[in-house]
Image 1 (cartoon, rainbow, N blue to C red):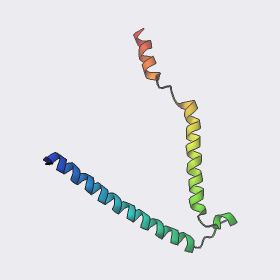
Image 2 (tube, rainbow, N blue to C red):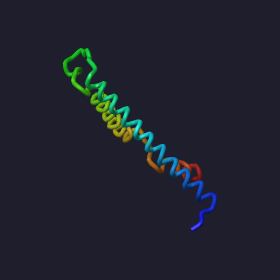
Image 3 (spheres, one colour):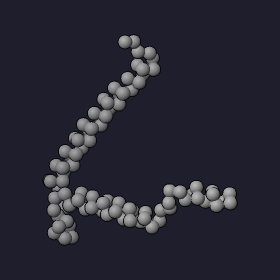
Image 4 (cartoon, one colour):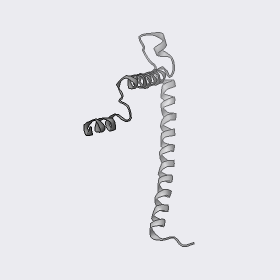
Length: 95
């Protein structure tokens, strides 16, 4: 099976993406390990006792993210227009 130049270029790009994707994943995993070690060893001075719990900032941030997504879904029901809004408007202009 003989590959033309475009197919060779495509395969090279796919291999490069896989290699850099793995490198990115390894770097991300290393960063995760470093941050977990810092999280365990760091001393916090929170206002309340629960703020000193391990991984509290991460859990608090994730909870805030989930709350914002849920509020966004709720607001969408009241603020979003129907999928046919603009097509209905065009029909009204033609009439």
